Image 1 (cartoon, rainbow, N blue to C red):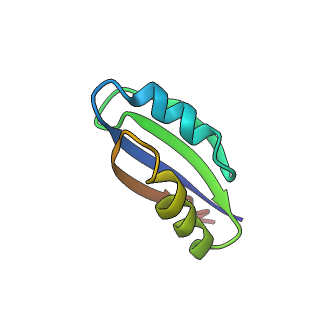
Image 2: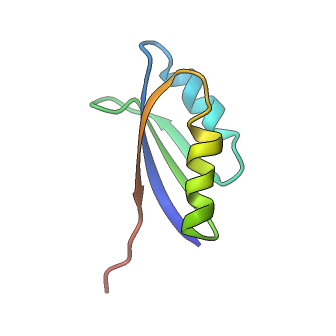
Length: 78
């Protein structure tokens, strides 16, 4: 499994609605409202990098109120 953090910027006042909507997307492990340069941080997983990309582009980015995303895949350095 490939996991990633998706950092989301939203329209003003939309962070809570975006977090709730993204939490319901299959493949999303968690979605939290945060403060700082990003408004919501999502942890997601998929069985391949391609499917992770599809999850972000086709499902997460289609949530109303999102203005920008940054996807950060989790790596395990041993």
